[in-house]
Image (cartoon, rainbow, N blue to C red):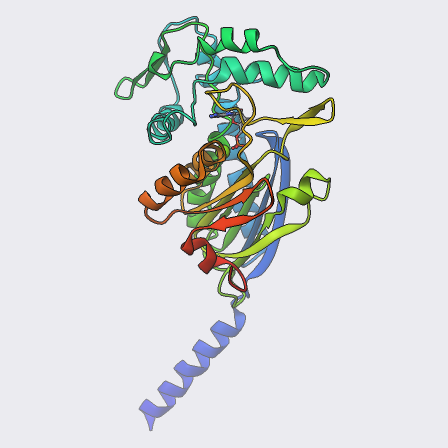
Length: 342
Ligand code: AMP
Ligand code: MG
């Protein structure tokens, strides 16, 4: 009888405790002060204070990484800006820069140079002409700059944490990978504080654990690039189920200018020195956001067969190509993630 009473009391205690524990609520925060993009963090937390602590920690990390990877404005510390202005001298840098350069070198090799972290001298020209918005750069000017884009001129000493650009006129441009890498760092940080999260950094999406509201996955929309080129950027090509995965797109509609009615965008083919023209958009689905970011830029410039073979050689990586005629091709893994099938 006593034992029975004790069990009843214990049961009542457990019930009242679970009744007291607050439910997970969904919160959202947006910031617009790093990587030239809007950072949105969505997550399920027990309280607003718990969410604020997690999202603010992620925001601070995003700002710190922005300073390391920014090549456009002068930044203090040992990041890309400092390396680009070291006049060919070796410089001790932040460990994150070494990590991204190692990933970038590996990617340059795997993509036969279509992705290159050493293209800054050329992309700087395009970005200057784009902001002026009037003319195209001349081929002579682009060719002269391309002399300073030899990736073997990046000397990396991971042990001593130094980077040296053997060609003092070389400029690193990590714009195709740094944001994704940063998002992955944020994901690692959030996993320990608020595991059910979704990060959206200007379309570079990283989902954490499933939403803590009973749904099996986050639903992520992939932009319809043909509609985006006509100014309708909210139209989606398709929706995908995402848990512990990144969804990263590269497209010509993201950053471009027009000369004589023709659009010239920001993803430059190192062979032609001109904007790539094979696809409207390529999206990569992979757990690691840094890898997905590199790959989406590279695939945008690679022939479909070569790009598809690369994706199939990488476990856990899928892709969606949108051709210039708006036809869509995807790997079986991407089709499986599509809401409602391919
Ligand atoms: P994303 O939006 O990730 O595809 O990256 C585009 C950005 O990467 C551009 O704005 C440039 O800063 C840089 N970029 C352009 N062309 C290349 C290339 N072939 N390889 C690596 N980075 C590039
Ligand atoms: Mg990229």
